[in-house]
Image 1 (cartoon, rainbow, N blue to C red):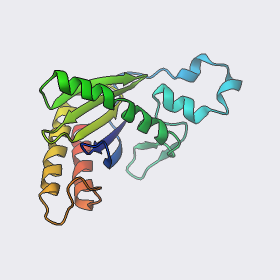
Image 2 (cartoon, one colour):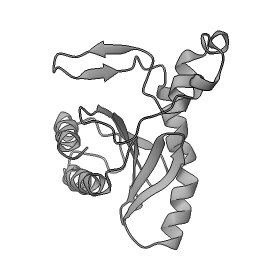
Image 3 (cartoon, helix red, strand yellow):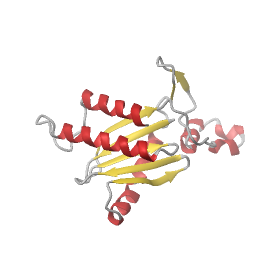
Length: 179
């Protein structure tokens, strides 16, 4: 099961993104979009159809950690399109609700979009397959803490791209813990 995290500035500029492949089993079994199409029609567009169906990718490669790592990057554009398309829905939910954790705000096939909006209007967007509300809430809270600590660094520019290896390591550790 994969998770895709995007941190966006108040002007919707991407500041950080992470793709995390969880070794935890998925709670729902995805049904690929291409299963209903003849085989001759899916060969040329296999990567796009797989990405649109909610599956991670056609290619699977084994990682050293023993888990299976999906992807070769061919569906990255679809993931970004889903995240960008959810921004309007997130803005509507923010106007209607006062909470920071917005739970699942949008769904695209098997991808669910969860969001967290800070008081400074930073948007944390997570694309995921399956349901894990408490884990996602805890993950967003920890990422927000790490983000605040990074912004308090006098050598970091506010709303600038986050390239800190320490930030990345802590976000990845939180993803392993909660997702």
